[in-house]
Amino acid sequence: MSGARDRDRRSWLRGAPPPGWVRVLPAALLAGVCVATLASPDPLDIGFLLGAIPPLAVLSYGPLATAVLGALVLVVLNVPAFRLNDPGSTDLLTVGFVAALSVLVSFVRSRRDAQLVTERAVAEAAQRAVVPPLPERVAGVRCAGLYRAAQRGTLVGGDFFDVREGPRGVRAVMGDVQGHGLSAVATVASLLGAFREAVLDRPDPESVAARLDRRLVVDSAAVRHSELFATAVVLEFAPGATAVRVVACGQAGPVLLRDGQAVELAVPVGTPLGLGLSDASPSTGVSVPLLPGDLLFLASDGVWEARDADGAFYPLLDRITGFAGDLPDLVERVWADLVRFAPALQDDVTMLVLAPAAPEPR
Image (cartoon, rainbow, N blue to C red):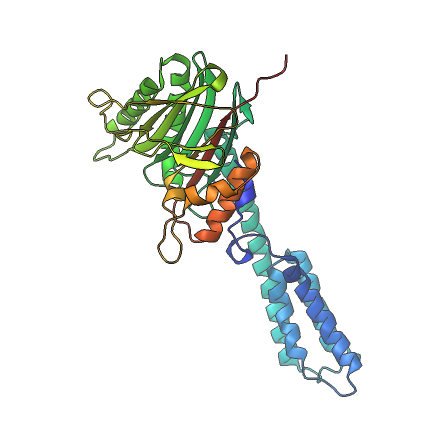
């Protein structure tokens, strides 16, 4: 999961650091005006360009550098050698006021950016605490995951996944809480906590799903008119990862990649979590044998339901077989292709890839 790497979708006009040419522009403009006036045999009426330098400096520099550039502008306007049409006192006062105002704006922006950096660091820490990065291998299962929150400016949201080893083998979960953004984080944390406990004492993946369902029911009982629910897929790998048992609760099962083919496993889709139906209508799992080289690819609705400008759904099964590489490369290439296909994604995007690992040498 490369939460810090994404972002990815932000341009410098939406909060990302400005590109190099924006930082160079104020100094380049100042130097260009000076060179042009010195090289021209006649006076040039281009002094107005210097008034744009302090506001441009605000985009990239702190108050000190902005003040220095503003002072240089005033110096250039007063140096006779540049022949900038002898600016009057009104012009100088205007440029001086703009420069002073730019310094103030730069100071406010710097303080705001520092606060945003702190908040982003806290968000990254929260993300790692709620959905920590996956190891490359959990016992006999290799794994890789990718998570991207739909809500701009956030690193956490309503999707979750985890892979854990317990007394009965390796178990994995991937799910999607109702809604997305920061409001879903508490529910994600509660579900993952319940999953990690269930890995230790539940006898099968069906009972793990029942534990998650009960957790959501209990959490929503104290909330009036709550409609809290989640969809999830729970997996349990047999010893040696020779087979996997899949339980689907409200969402489709994984895609099996084998010998260059991609097939969506026919797993009965049970009721979503949080409806309290695990006793009356328990989810039924399906066991699937695995061969060396097989991959299980799980994707959230943010992948399956992504649409292009014409309204067509993202053809995951058709495209995924064209992406070569190991597990981390696979999720990154699917992500890059998905963004090209549907740039305006509106939902959290989560991918989890699992594969039998070669036996560790003794």
